[in-house]
Image (cartoon, rainbow, N blue to C red; front, side):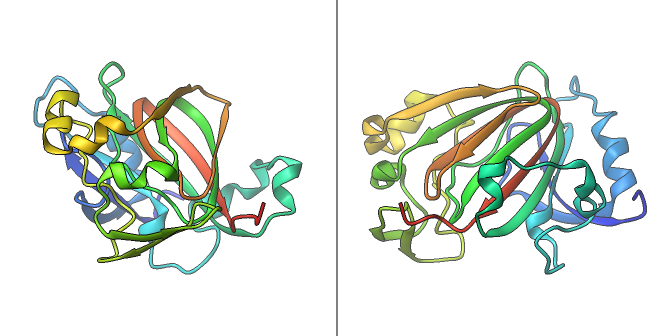
Length: 220
């Protein structure tokens, strides 16, 4: 698998992963070497994050995850749902400070499976979308959490940067103070179900590996 070219997000310390991070292609073997040899004492250290979503390959399961399908067993309740994509998330971050993703929502129900590491997940209901300063303008939100937005392809992202102190966030985005979040720490071997349209921001600690599966939202 080491000679497979994969898409990664690249950022320097202090920036969030997500819509503004640089995208690049590297060998999977190079990604693994970087992940296991990051110098976190360097204030300008770079982080790479594997994200198969940005791959040009059109398939529900893409390499290198496609090589591991025989090692995966989904819960029985998920097997009856219509799977739209599966993704492998792989990266490293300071084990104490972590690295943040941007706040966003997805159009499918999401089963998030943590294989290695620790992740803190902050969740917001679709009912709080107006208070989360979306990049696009909200037109409607369905009972399944599907957002109809107008704007750019990044409309499902929030403008809020959780690398900033909360006081600074509220000063710039005052409606955020009205939003209500739920936080949980996901440990190795645990799964988290994120319903369609629920906003989520993830902080990852240490070397972290996760797999997620998206399905078409159910009607009820």
